[in-house]
Amino acid sequence: MDNYKKDSLTLKGAVALGTGVMIGAGIFALLGQVAELSGTWFPYIFIIGAIVSGFSAYSYIKVSIAYPSARGIAMILMKAYGKTTADSSSFCIDGAFYDHK
Image (cartoon, rainbow, N blue to C red; front, side):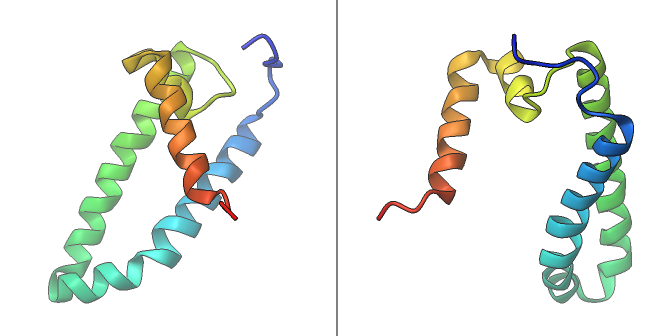
């Protein structure tokens, strides 16, 4: 955390990052599958998903205010479960995208 620069992520940057992730992963990748699986219940499922996402965003905001850090989800995992879990999660995520050739 010694390399963290205060105010390195602006509000505009954080909103752009969050919006990009939500649109990229949530809408384009999964919306069609959810619509197919839920059928006529799709509008209700969509609203429930929006509510759950709102609670998730609110919790990220509260934790980020309490513990400002550039580590994102890794910092939350470290605070909740300790350094080993955060490092293990990072290793697993990196391993999933790393070409092992």
